[in-house]
Length: 364
Image 1 (cartoon, rainbow, N blue to C red):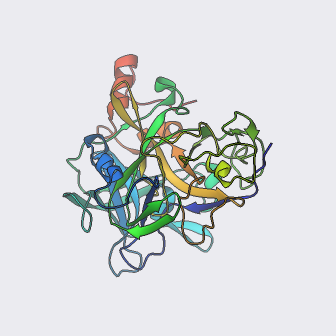
Image 2 (cartoon, rainbow, N blue to C red):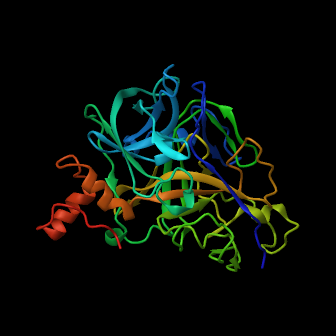
Image 3 (cartoon, one colour):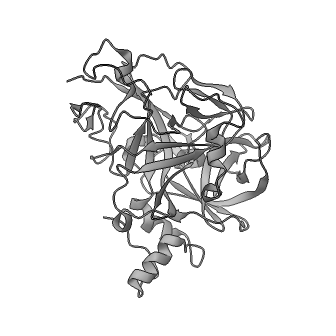
């Protein structure tokens, strides 16, 4: 059984920017990255219109885009906690000034729907600004005025089943893109969407040790120690599958065998990887014709025995993405957002099924 070595992870936000440029999804090498590539076209579909990009005024010198978010009520956006917080004396602190823009926006193709200021940030309990494997990288931001953009419905695993095995569409912003062979390299300032199968949900209770338990499977169906045993059940994973899966999954001399971490090794039509700048963006699942926000982009990672040298580039074949699941946080969301703005499609579904209830129950 092939064992992976230590896992390295990076936040998926472009923190510390001093200019407007940032980074975005990497694509299959059969695609030519650009403002009109198929991934950009996919992101423009109406079911992803609730996606926006978040800008922070870090030094009172102007707003710079560092992440993404999804409108879930007319005046509330769901994003990653690390997008809207920073470390002060070892503790997370909320950036004092933020805004979100919907549509492709300035320096991006397409129309600008509107920019909204933020007057409140509510961070999920347990976020310490450091431990991404604990599964608490989530925050709600309140807008000073409501948006006319249709909010995304929220995914409930108890109603709609497990996320694992479903094909997701993940939406994010930022400037640089590239392919699975190059990592992110080219600036195009476009919103993009990729498709990936949700392969795995963490099985542990959180923690910083990535080198425990054999939860993943390689393309032959054999257990492989990918080190996700202590990752919280609040986190789900996708990996960037390559069109070339190798001739023998257990032949460590074939570098293409490292391209598939878990689940099927067959890439989707729009397979890709999130990279720094995409943090807080939405992972969407469509069930019975309705599209739901099921996850929030948190981090990208790779193992030390990858055939690629990462350096300052991310999003190579074989890299994995971690997403905070929305479903376990439904109670947090619906107790933070007051009625009536909390009513999304999934809440209305619950009202129809449970008639006497006006709030979502937390998932088990």
